[in-house]
Amino acid sequence: MLTFLLASLQIICPDGSYEGDKTCICYDTDRQFVNGNCDKCASGFFKLNTACKACPQGQNQVATDETKCTCPVSTSFSVESGVGICLCANGFGLQNGACVSCPTAQAVAGHCLCADRNFNWTADATCKTKTTCLDTQILNDYDQCETCNGAAPDTTRKTCVCASKQQSYVQGACAYKTCPNANEFVSKITGECKSCPAQATANHLSCECAANQVFSDQETCTCDLYSISHNGQCIKCPGNAPTDNNKCVCDVTGAVFNPDTKVCGCQSNQFVSSNTCTTCPVGSLPSQDLTKCECVGENFELKSDVCICQAGFFTKTNQCLKCAENSISLADRSGCDCGDVAWNSASNVCKVKKGISGGAIAGIIVSIVIVLIGAGLFTAQLLKQKVDKQKALADKFALAGGADFV
Image (cartoon, rainbow, N blue to C red; front, side, top):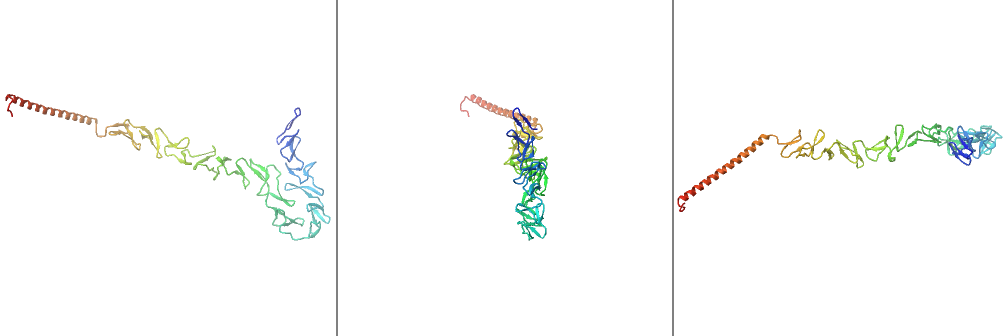
């Protein structure tokens, strides 16, 4: 409601208007602010239902009836196809843009008719014999040849038809039709007034749809070329990417647009390589930045697109276990290598090769010791024999006097 604060001379204007010089001014120029609102049509406009329509050129709204406009002498106001026009009054006919009296003929709806239907009312206000109309003309209801300006005769050659169904032929020219109700538009398919779809507003000859929608040739609101339909809404594709079969075309090959998060992304087991979604090998997942794959589980590493255990570990029940002390892992990580001794896979320890027991090893060692001892005794016996022989020779030499002994 409009409120005037006279004490401070401040004016609070209602919706649809703004403050002017000590009054409110309507945003719509075809309306004027009266009695605290913008319901009244401005001068030069007449009210048709709830809409304000322009009066004929040079005419104004009738002071006592806002649904009518003034008209020149010999004419009367009429509305045809939502357009206000001034028609010749009874007893007058339109000739060359002016209303003239019909002294020798009867007047019908602002046109003069000759008493003899074999005659036509002509431009010089006389009745003359009918003539054949040109291809661009029609023979109207008043037996006159009428040129279709910007239009074409229909198949019956009785009316002029405009190229667009949104137009009607009024006062010798094509004019766009108007609708009486606020949320209606003139259909280009049928030429009739039609309500706009839900959540759309009328714009005379079409409708303005909600965000990310366009008014289609079928006169419905559909998603534009850069949006997809999801749960009754049109979701904009990232970066105004185009759509294909109601799917956003993502920059990364193989990526899929998620309308809930409004983001393009690869599948959960893929990373981005050369601008393409690439599937990670079995046992691995993409890194957080989606630039590589990382093996799942401890002590695994990715080599040649295969997840294997790191060096020094072997695979057992899908886990990487550390090899026994003094051993290394095999190339395929299926086990460990203890060098000259065997590796026990069950207990993961290095042990003596199969077939050589501890007792056998001890026996070998004892045999070696015995051999060594025997060799030593034999050597000692030989030395003793040599010493004894040398001593016997020495004694014999002494008995012989120490000379000429051979």
